[in-house]
Length: 114
Length: 114
Image 1 (spheres, each protein chain N blue to C red):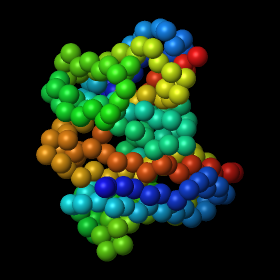
Image 2 (tube, rainbow over the protein chains, first blue to last red; image 1 turned 30 degrees about the vertical axis):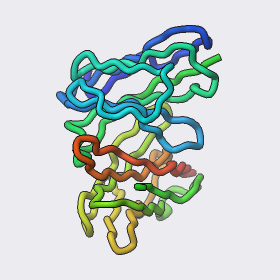
Image 3 (spheres, chains in turn green, yellow; image 1 turned 90 degrees about the vertical axis):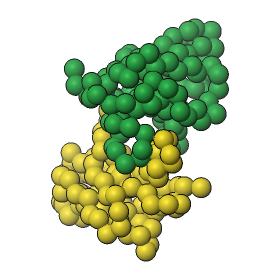
């Protein structure tokens, strides 16, 4: 595997379910990100991790819980979601969080909340 | 605050037509500027970037010049192909300590017809 991978690619869940999204980067990067992409809205940055430490949390509801066990893996744990949380969730990584380096994106997980 | 404004789409062109997608930005400091492309069913890919005023980024026939005086970073291509059909995102990054983050425009959908 190369680049940034995400699993699952598609997920349908009820509002009472608990599920997790997984992201893995094979680029040796130190920073990882979660974004939410909804129809007709700009990409929303959710969380930023630098060297496994969360450095940014953009007022995301607590029903989204990130976890970064090491610099190659990032999870997004989901529980008691709402239908408006249905979106494409994108993971990205970059060399660092300086802002000078490009971010590499995974293919995303298409989430549908019933 | 920092922001990016893109022309609204969709933009519909015939093959071999000239493409311009306008992008203007507002930023404190000295941003880096990026164009990302998202093909159907995929994540975002970096198309080109420019890190200082008057720099020109180019890739796959696409070009954009960092214009500080007009705070713009318009994307151009001389002759589009059907395979260029995608959503194009303009973005900026302003380093803020250890949390330099990408701020995206809303995206412009390009449809190229044979």
